[in-house]
Image (tube, rainbow, N blue to C red):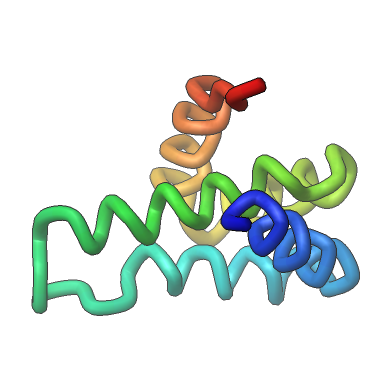
Length: 89
C-alpha cells in the first residue's frame, strides 16, 4: 500500500515544475524541526527520498538540480540515500 501511495505522490510531483516539487520535498525534511530531533525528522527525509525514487528520471534530475542551488546539503543527502534504496521483490 505504501509503495502505491508513494508512486501516486511521485506522479503528482512529476507534473509540477521542479522548483515547486523541490520546495515541498525540502519542507518535508524540515517540518517539525525542533519538536523532535530523532525518528520524525529522519522519517520525513526517508519519505522524501522514497518519493524521489518513484519520480521519472528526468523530473528527479530537475528537482535535484533545483535543490542543489537552494539546498546543496539536502540535495547531497537525497543523492546519498537514493543510492541505498533496495526494493523488495
